[in-house]
Image (tube, rainbow, N blue to C red; front, side):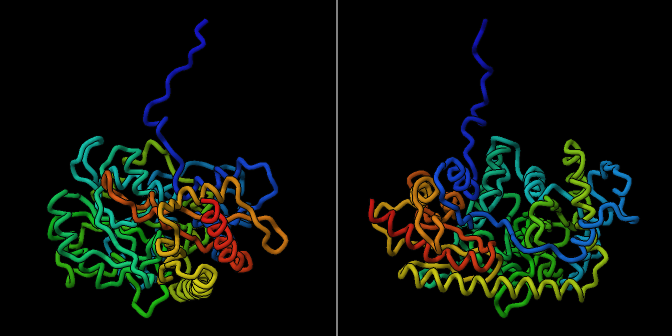
Length: 438
């Protein structure tokens, strides 16, 4: 009898967990009594919008499509009501939704996957790569690798005051000329950095996209979550008067996960002003049949909410995160003097950089393995360890180049305030313990 098993593909064998998940995977292998304070992933702990809660709690009500226990497929594009919810949300922020179309996807991740298939060149080639702005959300890099699409990058830099700066226009234009990308990804309320792209900076990037005929893909998962005095920023705020020719080149990635506090619903989507792209995006999704219909129904409640109600909601969520992020970043600086912490200007993240206080040879990946696998310390009577996301995977570096993320980690401010209060001291204790034993 042949005891050999079929081979797995080289691609599959070489797969490694995402930077935002691997710490928890390692921690789950422990057998001691330590608890993890996991701020590695944006797993929001706030309740959903009341209209969504109402539907979730009444799935068997007279008006529910599930009252008889029947759960059918929707169309691949999604329920019309759910698509209208995405458009109603955009309208509530003051954007003109005339001519825009939407598709519902299985979370923002599937929207990313299908969009990359739609804008990048053939698998395994350098043709029509995707242009990212490092530090870039690691899922764009991971998904591109998984489907064999090439990415190229321009890089932001974190200064000693905690501000990320965009490359100048000449550097971006030079990269476009050299690598000839077919699309640019921007995240106006940035994951992973907490950097806020002003309207003026988006307009500048959009002008380059028109000049060189690139799609502009705007990941707007955190739209409305900004904590500066600037106006709202979005690809949908850019007008033809500001950027002639921009119409028909815009795609936004949408999600129920963050602003609406519904990570586990796995409802995402795209909005675009290009009808042909939307048609083909839906066609590419047909092998997946449809998105979770119960999640669609719950999120669809937002199609009927007024702009006034939604603006009130944005204000509540924005004020909540502004308070906890401002407090938490100040506490980290106090607990770990000399650490650089990025300014909490947008989204729900900041980056901590220990480059100025760590011993030579520090590696954030190794430090976080130490936290996940062995470290624990008493915090308020509990043995705890911190889990955050190492930043090396958020950068695209050339062979032999030093990765800026080797001394950086991303923190997601998603737990309850009383739990977040423990993070700064816990992280500082873990860092000091790691440095002492090196």
